[in-house]
Image (cartoon, rainbow, N blue to C red; front, side, top):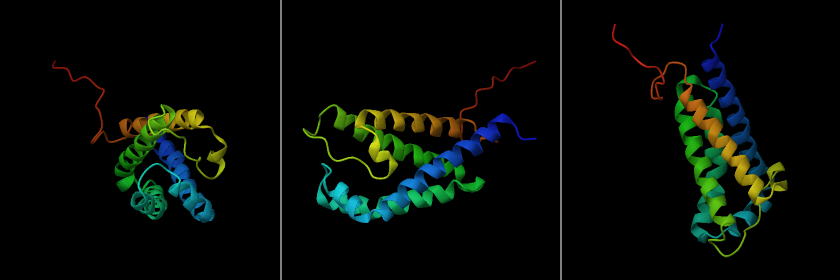
Amino acid sequence: MKKLGEVLWEGIALVLMVLFAYTSFSKWYDWGGTQNAMYNQVFPQWMATLLLYGLPIMELVLAIMLLFPKTRTLSLWACLICLISFTVYIGLVLTDVFGRIPCSCGGVISSLGWETHFLFNLGFVVLAVVGILVKPDGKGTLDMRRETED
């Protein structure tokens, strides 16, 4: 019988895998919309081009890595970094740092407003952190157990 930590680790990996695979495939499915959205962002065109081609590949690679226990922790960390980065970007948009609000994301997520998308991302940041912390073998994670001398 699996322990709760292992079930959580696998379940969170599955949820993040679906999210990252979905975002990857939705970019490819609506390539024209993805191009328009990316080039409407506030960063330079060279960065938009890099993200346009790099993000869908990276998202798919991370989704695949989440399938395998040997690469799952590395992928959880990489997913966490991606989620934090995008959440910070959304926070900057919401605080009007850029002076304008760029267009929204594609797919089902496009129906979310920027504020809701920010909260959506925060939820996945929390999931990724929990996934890292509950890794069954305890390697590379915070050890919440106290050791005592008898």
